[in-house]
Image (cartoon, helix red, strand yellow):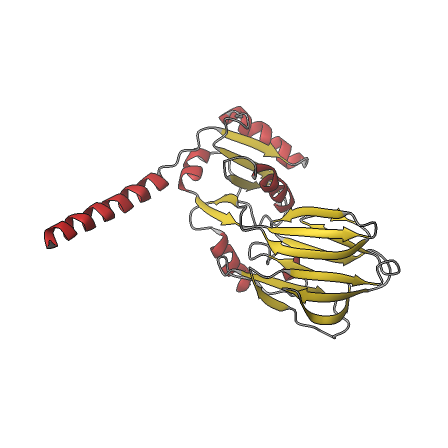
Length: 279
């Protein structure tokens, strides 16, 4: 009996080892290059396609995005319908979601890259005319004032009112991946990747003064109701895709959808978040 158990154990660990080896042997031979309209990005696109070619989307093993973080978000949204990951090279400014730009050794970098999975948010925003605007956000869903006066918001979580009135310039719900972006710029917390937590953060809160926001489980359903939407107009935004004259916004995690993103070995999202935390 012990020999049979030992044989089963050896076969199991042999299978795990084989799977690990296979996962490290992923080859991204067919590369699809996309670039933003920035001059540096288009010049890089031309050089890289001259060196590596440019596969069609239906044959691509990987998409390489050339630009900044905004273009990377656009590419991730675009690639969600394709069965291939996205690897970004920075031709913009900050480049938090991007890898360093280099022309040489791209196949080797892709082969050694670490893959991260990101679950986005689903935004359902209703406007004054009753139209529902639905969109996906990888970083954050935000509700922002669109006029000269501060917003008056009521905040509910899982159907229960948690804040009767928040007077502010806006509020947002961000994912761990997006917590270092807009959320961080308004003093929201940086969330560890894999923490299954969302950050609810106010922008320039006036009442309650200096409201610190909240950390919520990823399963939470967050609702913002705009009080006085006609005299205090609001716009809803999901990763820079906007809807106007909003009266309410509901935000949920879209766990059935995932975005695949590649980072150079040793420079994955967790490492990047830690670097931001200790700056």
